[in-house]
Image (cartoon, rainbow, N blue to C red; front, side, top):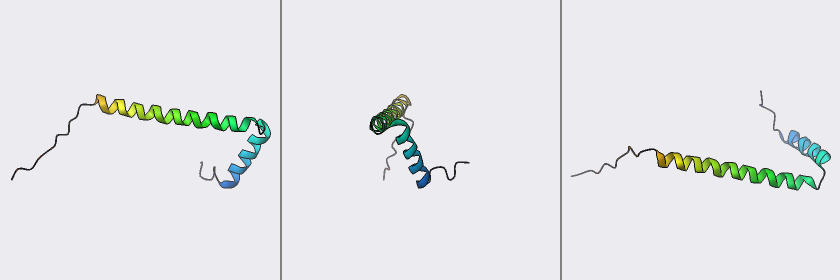
Length: 67
């Protein structure tokens, strides 16, 4: 369904349409906001994984070999 969606020419057309609709002054602000939201999402997911790892009891025990 989405096999050829993000080909280079499609991205150029989407960028051109965004430039026409939003204008050159709003586009950098939009990019900055998008970048900050992606960074926030990644940090929230990392924090969720850290909390999940801390809450799970450690079931693996170190096995030492005795000779």
